[in-house]
Image (cartoon, rainbow, N blue to C red):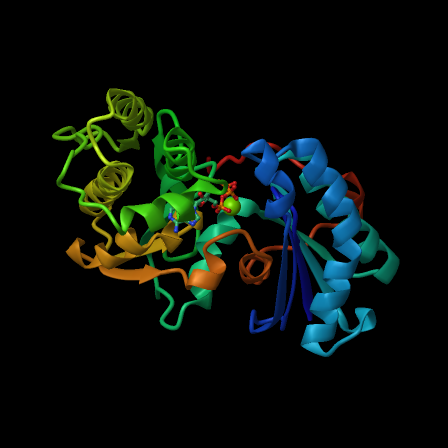
Amino acid sequence: MILAIETSCDETCAAVADLDGTLRSSIVASQAAEHVAFGGVVPEIASRRHLELIEPTVRAALAEAGCVASDITRVAVSTGPGLIGALLVGVSFAKGFAYRSGIPLVAVDHLHGHVASLRLAENPPAGAHLVLLASGGHTLLIDVAEDGALTTIARSMDDAAGEAFDKGARVLGLGYPGGPELAALAVQGDPAACPFTTPLAGRTDLAFSFSGLKTGLSMAVTAGDNAPADLAAAYQEAIVDHLLDRARLGLAATGRTTLGLVGGVAANGRLRARLNELPANVVAAPLAWCGDNAAMIAAAAVNLPSLSPVELLGLDAHARSPLG
Ligand SMILES: Nc1ncnc2c1ncn2[C@@H]1O[C@H](COP(=O)(O)OP(=O)(O)OP(=O)(O)O)[C@@H](O)[C@H]1O
Ligand SMILES: [Mg+2]
């Protein structure tokens, strides 16, 4: 069985899966409550909390899967991108576990993990497909070839979609994490009351941009002419318009006919409701696996090579990803 570990941000996660990827357990210990007072993740607090939570979280994942440490024959760990101090807790734990048990370790890119969350869907994409990854730190179009090779074909020129939700929520005086709070307020508003211009409208750049929207929202809030719920609804609508617009361009550019939607923003209800506008067979990651979790790290590890004993000892965390 595989033990997968994920500690790239403010969630301490462990999962157990069979070697073919069949999920046995998944535990996500969120630290969100500890960061609320600061309006965002404080890296030093996150690292310290991961240190306290990693062992009980792994124990809970083993217990939920009905197994013990000696049943684990492979360890997978997210090595980045993310907060270095936070990642190092997971990486060090995984190295220690693999070394002590004399079992192979698989290093997994966190973004590859998000892409692999599609394998946990009821009808996972079969064959080549395009993936829209919209999370707190990234907004990407990733082409997945028939052999599983990943190629990023579009990135954000500035903020990520999740960051746009979080910053928009802050501008509207909402709590943290901002995405779900802004989405909840938007349900009560009318997106047509004060529409924002869709970023890069009419342009064919394979790229995302969200910072202009945030500036537009700040100006509208300062002007004070619109109800906060209408502003939230219009702001969310513009983010969704932009994501769908770029997904359409990516599908046309690659000729792919299946689109996967992954990452924390994939949990957004309005985005999910409008996926049927896309000229593709769309597979969205199940809600439970949109945000950070270790089940997706286990899913990604199934088709990845293990590190040699020498590589294992030298394994390090990295803040950035070649996919980002
Ligand atoms: N319902 C929602 N609507 C919009 N945004 C949401 C929703 N739920 C979560 N988010 C956003 O998703 C983001 C978190 O996603 P995720 O955990 O995948 O990001 P991350 O791991 O911090 O970044 P990355 O994966 O790029 O390293 C946050 O910005 C959060 O506000
Ligand atoms: Mg993530």
